[in-house]
Length: 354
Image 1: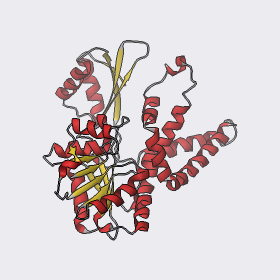
Image 2 (image 1 turned 90 degrees about the vertical axis):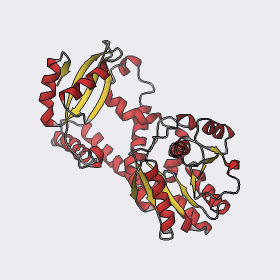
Image 3 (image 1 turned 60 degrees about the horizontal axis):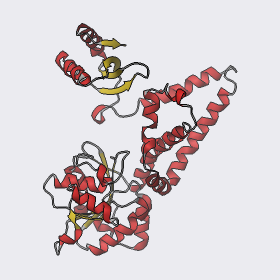
C-alpha cells in the first residue's frame, strides 16, 4: 500500500497497517516529514516500492491540494484504488469530475479521528480504533474499490459509515466544523482576560475550549472547503444570538425569563440527542465527585476499588482545585448504582461529593 502524505493521519495509517503486517510505502513533499514517518516505523520510502503494483493508494494531503494529488495518483497508479482522507468531500469530487478522471477507482473517505497535535511525531497506530470512518462512493465507484476503502477503515479498527459527499459535508459542518468555530471564538475572548479571573476556570471552560488548540492552517482549509454548509448553520446561530442578546438587554421584561428558560431547554433537548455509549441511544447517567490527594497512585487506587465494588464506569473527568493540593475525579454511573457507589466509597474512606 502507498500513503501520499505523512502528517498525523497519513503516518497513523502507516503505523496501524504496519502493525498488522501490511507493507506500506510513504511519500511526502516535505523530506523532513517523510523521514520522521519512516523513522517511527510508519513505512518505507516510496522509491523502494520498485515495480510492484499497490492495491491501494491513500491520499493524506491537505484539503486544498487533495484533488490535485488524487488526480496524479490515479494517473501514476493506473491499476490501483485511490482513496483520500480529507475532511471535506463534495468540492474534491466536483473538481475530479470536471477533470474527467476515472472515478471508478476513486473513493472519498474521512476518518473522524485526530488530535490537537499535528505532524508524524504525533501519529498513533491506534488513532482510528472505534472511531467513525465515513466512505463516500459515487455512482461511478466500482464495487471492488468500495470494498477496498471499507476494508482499509475496518483493518484500522474504525466503525464504517456510508454517506454521499453532500450528506457528509452537511453532517460534519454541524458536528465537527461548527464546534471548532464556537470553541475558537470563545477562546479568543480569553486573550485579554486577567490571570486572576482565569484562575476561576473549571472543567466547563476547559471542555468547551479544548479544540481551540487545533492547527489554524488546517482549519483555514477545512472551513474554506465547506464554507457554504458552515455558513448556513452560522445563520441559525446568529439568529439565536440575536434572540439571546435582545432578551438579556431587558431581562426583567415580560416573557424574558420564559425565553431564557426555553433557550436553555432547547439546548437540553439537543444535547440529549447525542448518541450514548457505544453509539447506542442517549441515556441519562448520574454523576458524583471524589476528592483525591494530588500524588501518584491515587486515581489508580480509586478505579481499582470501584471495580472491586462492582460498579461499571460510564464516563470519567478530571479537574484540579485551584486552592488546594487535591484533584477531583468526576464519575458517571448508571442511576441505580449511584447511591450504592457513594456509600461504598465512603465506607472505604474516600471523600465523596454528590
